[in-house]
Length: 211
Image (cartoon, rainbow, N blue to C red; front, top):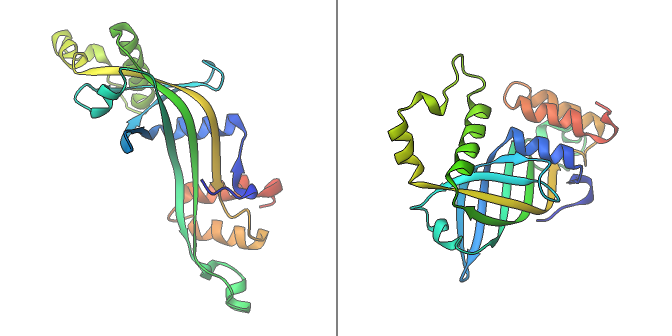
């Protein structure tokens, strides 16, 4: 990943926060020169392993299942807020016109080892955690016990747990840090009605929180 210093994010707590707020990951394994890519919601355990462990599940019908008979290297990407940035929002547009469009975004890249875990109790634990996390906003959160046990047992037979142990982690938070404070604030204001998360990120991550 091309990563200019001013966009580099190495703060582990900030990276973990980003993962937990954006749990749908792009999970990529290379096998025989081909990339097997999947999009999988993952739960982060910050305290496990050296740099944290990600847990989820995949269908046994997924080609990835067959690749995980042995532990594999994996590349995982989490995408957070993103927005197109118009040069009209820079003060230089009115002065000299030497400005161009760009794109702001925040991503977290993880290099790791991935393995499948054939253990129903472990799998149930992952499913319960993911369900609790993503049902929390519901007035009456769904839980696995709401469904008939024979149906749940049938569904469990079709999936397997996966565990991704993080070797290294880095973030690229491109949120107008390379612009002047005036430009960054203009961009944040312009995005308030359409991309409020990015407006907040610009104001939070701008150097020295000057905005």
